[in-house]
Length: 549
Image 1: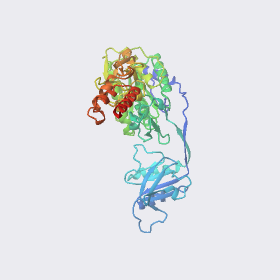
Image 2: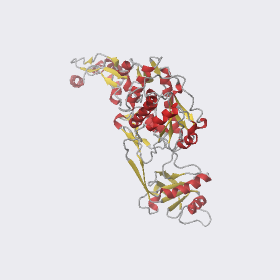
Image 3: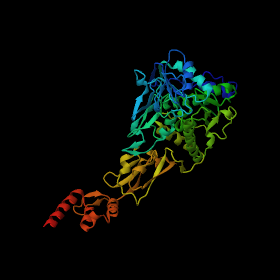
Image 4: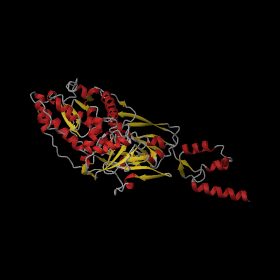
């Protein structure tokens, strides 16, 4: 969180308060598990034959090279070069699988064909005009310099360093029990999949699967997740928030004011910040994170609730487009929430590297006040969001009752078409968040707005298309947390025995859909629709016996 490589000025009251605050941070965090790679130095070079041969000549000894030519053989062709059409290439450091066309509708594992015991290549140098692996952030061990000579030089220099055993943190934790991706084959939220720049997340039957070897810690999946099913673990949000709470308290205790928390990433943001750190205003508290996308709406709003005047994110050209897009979306939600409570939207913003540090040193135009929140950042993402928003609302000078939010927001209601709904409870059976409930002993549909993550599974599951999502945020906690009834009916009772077995809406819809069907032309068949299962069977046998006689 703190970066000893920065030279921050401490010659003002705020500067001294910052120094005290940053020194107060407890950097001890819960350890995360590790992901291990093993690379034996089997390098696959793919490209036009002449280029591939030239690249092999530059690769240091100790690497076993396999060449796959994408062009016809050149004069004096090397017989050791494999010439075939590439079908697929996938994997990561130590485990790349390349399949080529073997003719007769067969595919050949190229590593196996070249006698590699693991059936995988450890490294890939892709000299194709366009990368064969198209993820925005390529997997470790994959280099695709295209026509960039400098990038090729860098790749050839790095490849020998990637032989051996390596470890990295497992950046995420996943709780499938609260994942809103799908239920019972009905598709819902896919925000983590869309936000991942490494294509490490794939759809599974009732959830997602995250490949820890492809994941490189971008964190935008956790930022995008509306339920908190995917959590960033390096560090965990609870450790990060506790450190930030301590820091802001220490800053205030040392008489610092107008605190601006500036998040920046370790790999690229550090270099940008280090060059001009001495010029930062004393109220700017720089916090290093692994990746800028790893902090999202819950962290930003909690930091504001803890007493910061502004939260800023250092942006630069190396931030992947998918991460930038997701953070932009989350900032848009944050801006709507703040504006709805009467706060200026610039409380949350990017800080572009091209405007650094001048843009950071702008003072906030109005203070939140002295009432800093004291809640701990525990209980998961939704709990933190609720406590932060409730605190900001309590401190707000003006607000509305309901804040309209953009599509994809993690809060909202559902709009029910009362006439179309038959109370079939298909929506209740698939809701992953417990937002929809049945009426127990009576036909009714109930809704708890705070639980709704706007995943859309209920909307897709409804056979009558009676549900529509409405992204919004209710500022009244009582209304937001209460159970309200969306629709109820008296149960429909069997016309034969009086047993309750359906709802009037279901029976009416069955009559509408089966009217004119050849099996329900006579009145007795239609009347059977109004009978319970037992009476329906008895009536069918009685009718058959009467017809036979």
